[in-house]
Length: 170
Ligand code: HEC
Image 1 (tube, protein in one colour):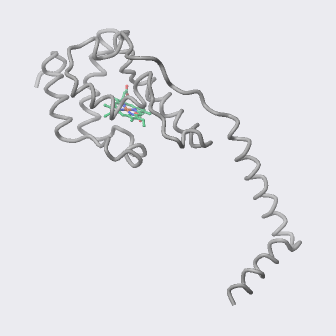
Image 2 (cartoon, helix red, strand yellow):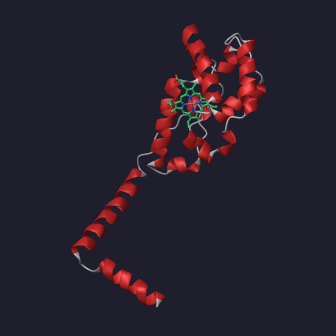
Image 3 (cartoon, protein in one colour):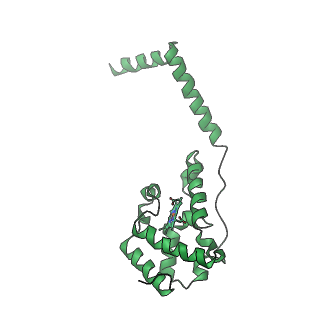
């Protein structure tokens, strides 16, 4: 019975009804596009070592705090992204590259030393805000990297640090 059904589906697929012709052409086009897409690999956001403008070189910061930022934020907010294998699968890689580009434009921890005092101060205030309201890391990112969800301990650590460098009062 099952076999019989499959054969019928197959017959409909190869038969020449107009709808099936359109369906087959669309499928073929999708397959071709998917193959062509793989030849357009986005450039990687990679550099050697820690930048001299890295936030940890600008302010005193313990290893634990810096490690938390590296683990949870640096993929999109630094000059060094750790890429998952699916970065090589297009169009997923293009989508990831767009997030990194966008994230770095708003805040780049590797370039913190090049920010004006006013800009740095503003970014530090935002740092606390986005962690407190859990708007960062991006939801789509946390879904694939659940360990990067910001915890209460992270927020406390960042707040204490911001107070210690005089970036916030309370
Ligand atoms: C998957 C990429 C990604 C990760 C990981 C990520 N961000 Fe972002 N972040 C973005 C993007 C994209 C924007 C800009 C668009 C937006 O606000 O949604 C942004 C914006 C921000 C802004 C706002 C800057 C501004 O000027 O508006 C702050 C602050 C920020 N992120 C902090 C963080 C912190 C802190 C972490 C880690 C706990 C983090 N982000 C992790 C992608 C990311």
